[in-house]
Length: 373
Image (cartoon, rainbow, N blue to C red; front, side, top):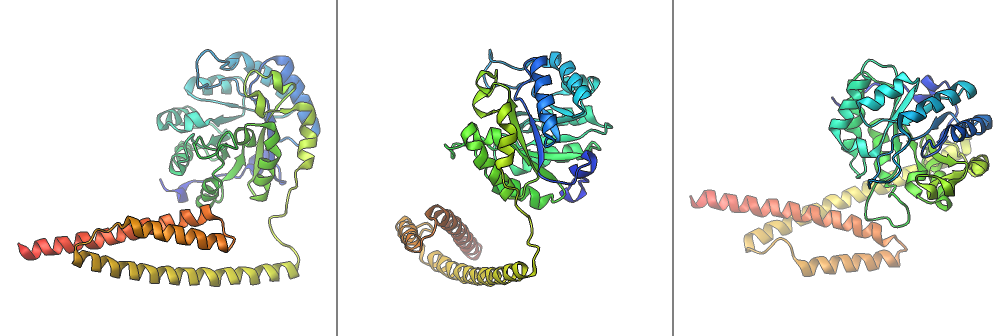
């Protein structure tokens, strides 16, 4: 099943709202009925929250830690939903969770990162939801694997579910020491490119991991024109039974939203549109020049490959690679360019060059063997 066959109903249609960003808020975990009713009342009264979230089954890294209140919390959510008229969503990780949630009147569910990583678990949930007209939010897998994320969405689509939304909560990597989970923005951007009809909600709480980073990440989400935010809110964050450091105090939530700047996605006046078009034309011209020069470089790489093959010289030349990367990084520094970007680019170019020259050498050896035979 290709992505072109995935039919998705936009969140604006089934949730009945036109404005963005979509705001989802609520505690990391449902801890008591009083907590849930308090949050529902205050968040609903802001008029800015479209859905509420609460974890009741918490997949934890270590045993003997708080794993949620379980099915005991479902009546609390139903009561809050009835009193304040705002839908709650919960995380489900297996068939039993699905049945309990639906039987309790939950109308929206999400699949967590620890579940998305396992296709067997995703399929079990998709089978349990088949034939149900219910929105399903799919978090990215723990590891930065776009195909695994798309595969989970495809499984739900194949089960007849079309109210699908992606949640980007960051990835567990060893590359980022600032955030709890590395945002790797290029991955959700690529997902949006492959599935433009898919709404992507970003979870800055799990990306940031700290309250003082939440504004920075949330503003980045809006600047990149993603579709909404899922933010963890708690009456007393420091006393929360799970993830206390990344939750916003309930009393500060409205002010937090007011501090975010929701930028326009398009220019509207003729002068700005004309200027943007001229600048984009310059970028197009530069890009074509880059591609032409890259083609010239590949041609020269191939010529060197043939020369190495004829001379019996190894493809990889360590001294030459060190010379190239040191020289390009110094030049990049002199030009005020990001050295990490240049290093990444030249590493990709060099790897492609090694691959092409290896193909040439192997072909040369194969032709020699054939001739000798």
